[in-house]
Length: 412
Image (cartoon, rainbow, N blue to C red; front, side, top):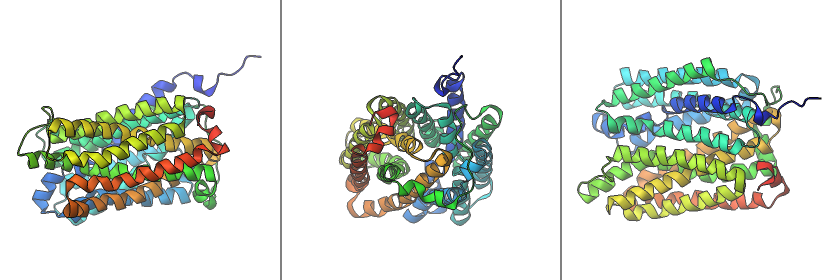
C-alpha cells in the first residue's frame, strides 16, 4: 500500500509560509506606526510622557482585550483563521488610515489606536496556527520565520520615516497600505495546510487550560519574561538612539539616521534573530535556545545604556545585538504551546498566552519614561533585564520535566 506523505513533505509548504509571512509583515506594520512618528506628534500635539506612552499602550490594551475575548470564545478554533486574519488586517488598515486623515488631537487617536489593537488580535495568533498546519518537524523554524516577518513589519514605519520625506500622516497611510495588501494576500493566496487541527466546540474552560498543565504553564512563564522586555525595547529604542546622538552633540550611526538605525536593529537584526532562533531551536531544543537568547538579551538591556552619549558605533552594534537576541526566542514559546497543548484548542491556547504576555508589556512600556526621569537613559533599560532573568528560570524548570520530551521531537 502506498503511504501518504508526511504533513511536513506536503508540496507547497514553503510557498505557503512565504505568502503568510508577507501578509503578517504588512498587517503588523500598523502596530508601531504611531510610535515611529512620535517626535512629530509630540511637537504638533504637545505630548508629554504619558501621551507618548499611551499611543503604544492603547494598541497593547486593544490587543489584550481582543485576545481575551477570542480566547474565551475559542474564536481561533471555531472560526476560519484565514478569514479572521484577513478581516482583521482590513479593519486595522481602515482604522489607522482614519487616524492619519482626520484626527487632530490625542484622545481620538488613543481610541483609534485601541481599536487597531483589537484588530491585531485577529491578525497575529491565527497566523501562527495556520503555520502549524503546514509544519511539524520544522515548526520552530517556520514560526521563527513568521515572527521575523512580524518583526520587520513592526519596524517598517521607522524605515518609511527614515528614508522618505513623508509627513507623519503619510507614514501612517503607508502602513495602512501595507496592511491592505496583507488582507488581499490572505484572501487570494493563504490556505491552511494538510495537517489541520481537530475541529473544536465552544468550551469556556479551555481559555485557561494552557495555565493548568505544568508544561504549557512554564512555557507561558518563559514567554512572559520575554515579553516584559520585548515591546518596551521596541517602543523606546528609537527615542533612545535619537537622544543618544543629541547628548553627543550630533553625528550618525555609521552614516544612518536614528530612525534607519532603529529599523536596522529592530527589523533587520530581529528578522535574522527570529530565523536563527527557529533553526537552532529545532536542532538544539526549545529550552536550550530560549534560555541562551534571554540571557544574552537581558545582558544587552543592562549594558546598552552605558553607551548613551558615547561612540555611536558602539551604541549601534549593541542595539543590533539586542535586536537579534530579544526576538530569537519569541517564536519558540508559541511553538512550545502548540506542542504541549490539546490539539483541538491550540488556537485558544496561543491566544490566551499572548493575551497575558501583552498585558505585561503595558506595565514595562509605561515604566520606562518615569525611570528615565529618575535615573536617565544610562540605567533605564536595565529595568527590563528582570524579565529575561525570570524567563530563564521558568524554561530551566521546564527542561527538567518529562513534558519537555514533547518539544522539538525530543530535543529539550
